[in-house]
Length: 221
Image 1 (tube, rainbow, N blue to C red):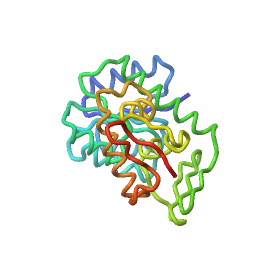
Image 2 (image 1 turned 45 degrees about the horizontal axis):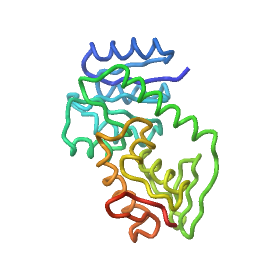
Image 3 (image 1 turned 90 degrees about the vertical axis):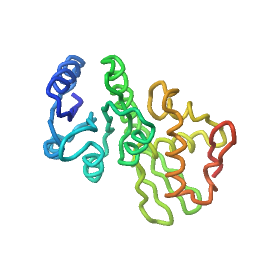
């Protein structure tokens, strides 16, 4: 049984999500603030749904703190709609962004998609080596000149997608859909920010990820 941790300061939303997720067969734990969210890590959740707008410690701060301890998908839940808010969420280590008010069907579809992706990773172990870059797909590890480089789950998924389809050009919309596991048209522009951050970490000279202007990106390493 997959375990969920739902973090939201609104009791009605916590209860709503708990009821629907339990109907789908998930074991659900809840927390009403950042401190309780930190305590909830002891349950080793398979996925976390995390509200952004909480008192004392907002969702971005919580995400940054717990990313040192968990590798599971983190889905932000918020009423904020500005692109910069989404960028901040992904920078903090989040994997997806769900806007309030939300559809329960969409929420469940996103949860299922992220969990399916996690299962695929567990069953596919191989290692990519190119010069000073090593990527262990199932171990979710990237080494550059022997140094462990920390990528967010979304950044790693983009690298994995491009490497496993080396030479193939992906539009930003395609990348968003493939790594999110859901229709990506609305937020595909955020992929450019993810690629920029990947380059800062492992590809500063663009020797691996090539920008195909007006189209998207491809792996050339």
